[in-house]
Length: 392
Image (tube, rainbow, N blue to C red; front, side):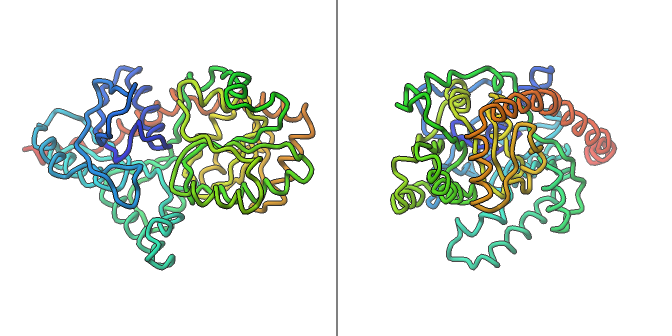
């Protein structure tokens, strides 16, 4: 596997890679990850199966680091046929082109997961490019890159349909990321509230994710201003960091929501995140660009009911009253769903319990890893004659 992002950079791609890699390793497969070297952080240490490549800062995105091509080339030159059976690319930047080179050097098939719906947020990061052009660029690059690999993995059927609309003809297999057993371990919600000075009875809404423009968090602030009219004590906790944080804090101030919004930054996934989900009365999510939406599953695994917009990848997860109430792309309707759960404690508890059962039955990491192994095996068997003739 090769990726432009991995822990300690916290996002859905990092989570997906680790979840699949650990499940595959538990099944006895050999997995090796190539990822950027980040500045050292206390308490962060890598497993032996992870190789870090020298990387440099990205001017317009200080959270990420780009692997240096010269360092990658040195690594690629050290590889020999037989080292790997398959290359799995997870991101479309330097990792994409390095993954293609590794596949060609070793004469093995190349898979790529299309994790991110780039057309929906590319204009935020290229503000000097007209939005219409940014969308066209995103679609053209996505189509070309998908055509360069042997198989594309899509986290949802909805994202597969989008890629097919782009004109992608490469085979696309739908394999969502599942949840590992640790996500079902009950967090200490009471301790979380105590740590952050949140009264036990205060209604608490929770958002977890990258604080970025494409997450549509400004929609949640608009919705919150409606909810507090009937629930003046409600609090929205936003965990994560990202480029939209300053804008959202200003928006909260401008709307007089300072006492109703708390920005916490990143939380430790091993302990803190489960506790955060458990502390919340409702998990709220308005992103319309998710290729899957793992945080929805994580919240449900903690028996926390969800209110969310079902669009693109989240539509493949959300089932009405199976852990969630589905809201329209409308602040008033979304607020009404939140208020319904805040008022009806029994409904809130029932939907939360149903969500945990639903996630456990349908979204386990082992089940999804089995699908990925089957995809790998089909591809390797199909490509074997090609590889053999190329080597000869």
